Amino acid sequence: MTRALCLALALVLSALPVVTRADEPDLQLEIFSPASGAVIGDPGGMAFVSGKALALFGAYQAFDIMFVIDTSESTAAPSGADVDGDGAVGERRGAKFLSIFGKLLPLPNSDRGDSILAAEIEAVHTMLDQLDPRTTRVGIVAFSGDHDPLTPDGYTEVPLTTDFRKVADGLENILDRGPGGLTNMVTAVNLATSELMGMQSAFSEKREHAKRIMMFLTDGFPTLPIEGQRLRNAKMAIRHAVQASKLNIRIDTFAIGEDALSEPVVVVEMARVSDGVFTPVLHPQNLQTVFEEVNFAEVEALEIRNRTTKKMAAYQLQNADGTFSGLVPVQPGRNTLEVYVRATDGTESRRSVTVNFMSDATPQELGPRDRTMRNRLMENRLLDLQQRRLEIETDRDEQMRKDLKAEIEAEREKARKRSEALRKQLQIQVEEKTK
Image (tube, rainbow, N blue to C red; front, side, top):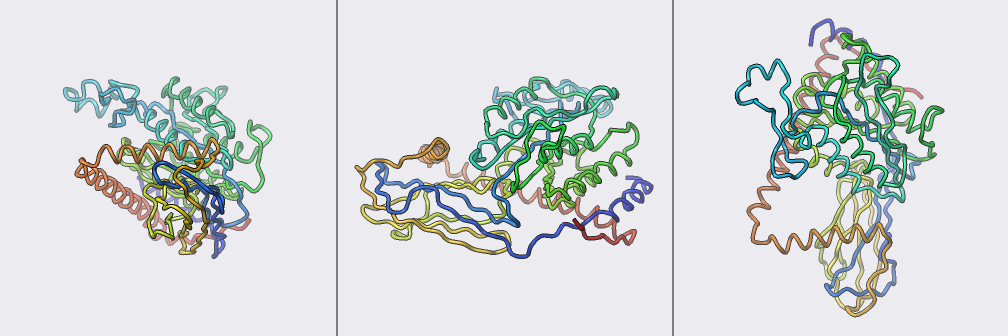
């Protein structure tokens, strides 16, 4: 980055706010199933436990999440993974023979189903499976950009909805249209803000007392709305993120690949000014794994146990929006099932229900959402039973996950240091935000 660009961005950063929040969160914990005093049965001797745990900094009762997906031409590049599951990993055609020219001219992807865009779409599918439509609305904004002022650089693919089938269909529509164009982050932030707030031009309706989150995915940096004016584009994107933050919108940013991480100031600052989380994804093939770990419920620990038998849940799932479920071994007769959660600030909470278990009693009555969660747990249990002889592979996968987390933290720290060094170099004082 040139010194002129650093100086100009520093002036922008000097006017940006620091978002602060209440010191003590309201740690909410609720058990949906089973009901206390219920008589349950299960041939496998397991009780299904589900509920929700949220550490709320304010009066938020639900989530409105807008996924903002970069569809610019650069997202046609290979992700490095077999995203479409066809047994082949897409790569640059001719890259082995034209490695020198490939750096100057983009080579075509041998499998568009394994592109960065495909990895973005698959990652959003992964998170969609974790969210609870009873309390969470989801929408999609896609963005790229061109030179025509009469054509939009971003569009609302799916307004906020609890019908996740519409969201899944919208994701596939984006993939079918494919990548193209430049990168207009200003339009993307504006449009997503409008949808989350239910503004006059939006297709979505505003929901009061909802926690509003923008999940912003990009593999680049802003090249529009003014072509050739990267500095001005950066300033505008950050300023619009500040405006979104004043409307209580949190922006979580995901910088995908080397290009996005070569100039991370914009996505780092967009997250910082909105009290969001910046996540570097150096290797696009890791994006789905990264999304499996996303948590905006401010809960860092969850334990489900049978207090009567002192046994932990054999299998459990913790979702991004705070919903959770688990399969807990039970014994005949009375069992006290307990859920413990700890918030990111150390606040703790416990809840328990007492049930009577009889192996031949009627199984728990579950709604559609809980049935889906129980099926996922049972699938995990089946896979575990099938793969017990493959413990070495399991250990290897776990080590890969740990290595990925370490890589993310290292890249995140590097990006933060770049921004911090810029401020220190010019002795910039950052003002606190006032609403």
